[in-house]
Image 1 (tube, rainbow, N blue to C red):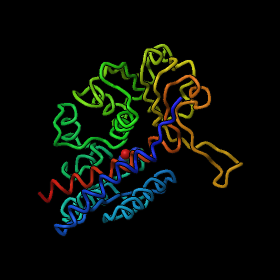
Image 2 (image 1 turned 60 degrees about the vertical axis):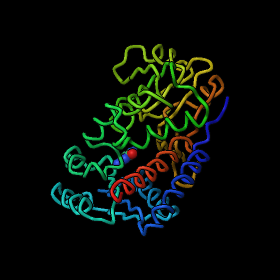
Image 3 (image 1 turned 120 degrees about the vertical axis):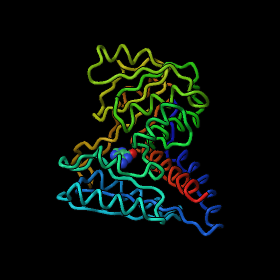
Length: 292
Ligand code: GUN
């Protein structure tokens, strides 16, 4: 079994991004990312902190906008409108999920698609489906694809089962893997909570992408011997033996699956660092396009 090291691949991606940032700086331009967090979800706060920190480490401008859980739709829309108009900001990310009273879809549609580094705006979703490379692709699936190519795993002609149908991961992951070219050309199945005999469907796969959001949901019975497993899950489970009182586990039961698969991503240290690295890359791309 080979462990796919997300931290080292993310470092590689960040090095490429640094070079592009230096190019922009010779023209007096600094890429800027705005991250908006509404409410106090601890996991979201941790993600946002991480994004902020990585921006700083790469020499990018970052603006963290933290708003209370009582923020109204109109207040949030006004913040997005300001960021759309702000020339120092090239990428805008509103952390998901927002509090229940917020219409997330309306917020997503309000973001200028040219600054939508999450790739959630309908224009960018359509561009991904149409294989139009001028759009933005969601960071987590982009990171998973990069992990596969970096680990030398052939996707062309492979049977891939994506478990999960979310707009953030499952759906864009499937479109990326079925697109023509490097890291694509796969035969893709999307499975989800209503899939009949999930284990049998997953066992057909050369590559399983687990994006369910439930701890240890996939076990040895889901994975064929010699398959490759990409675990997107980042689940907090209570663990009184740790300082924080919790630990992070994936959607895959690592202990039982690792021994039978060809390669697997760990949690933490697999997909997580890649998501942030791809976000930085998308932000620099947005900056290059907006200042061309
Ligand atoms: N919540 C979990 N993942 C993501 C992401 O990639 N982008 C945003 N905006 N929210 C998230």
